[in-house]
Image (cartoon, rainbow, N blue to C red; front, side, top):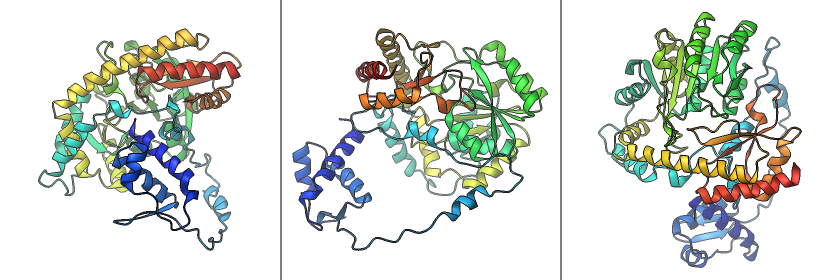
Length: 476
């Protein structure tokens, strides 16, 4: 059984049994729990740690686990109503409230309940992650001389060089190492956009980008995307109408549509931004999640930009693990120093052991093998999901089948309620992502996003679509 679900299931079973024990009573030994539930000692240890974090049990090294005693008196609740005024009173001149709504992000970060298939995930299933290679890389990195010392503020030179080679057209001196793609995007927005001002975004787009923009007090302005990426004519209109100086885009396997910016549009996008005196933030988030049947990939926009229009963001996280948060920012010209200064102020630097581990990982023979493996696996999963949808849910429109990334973007029938479908799907045992959080303005129709990378395999994909059929029968 997949470890995380084993831990959750054991914790839930022990939670139900706690009433058998009086406060302070000792629970069965770890060995007894291993034998009874047929799980590993690690699973038992993690389940008990989870209950301890909830305040339900107390663990004592060498003595065992005990049911926690009920507190005799509860701490009196304070009055935090004053914060509502303090958090909203950012100044009368502020036009954009600095609310922070993480709901569009947490839907792909939170693990679903046990038994629910994860069609809403944003990362590779653990069976697809290079866990053994990462563990070996981290162990080797920890033994490197100086591995626990302070790194250069810009990042290790060798790692910057590796990212620069992958981007093309930039040098290591034009690369900064950042703590994951989300942190790099946050730095770019702070460096490039004026507080309270507009920022152009693709429509639909990644909810985490919308959340970042709004948290920074920016106003997202949507620019529609079709099967060939962002529409240059509407991009030019949006620059003129809004006065924006930043456009954030995902030219390769865009989230959520999966679109790839067409060759004829690439130069147009750069020209339009240059004429507007604006930057293009290129979020190249899944370049390493290409499928085995894809043709040659287009170069990053940054590789064809000698004028410093593009600020490039690339990351190792999607191809490795959600906890392997190593990314790169690449830029030319004076903006590079601003990016560097903001990153230093925010976080000083990315921990050196993690940077050293990244170097060990990408330099090992296991790295290209891993990329080939996930390319084949993602193609097989995508094919399984598209086939199952065509067979069981032909009424859901799939306008584009991507050859990279980890998800499909489906349009629901006219009049459908995507929130009702998501709730029904959860009752049927499958978690999916509603489309509304991907739009910064009114959506043209109801959509859902289905991930095929976060489940255990093609069997779960087929079963998940079957459950989704039952949910659709209930609400559509």
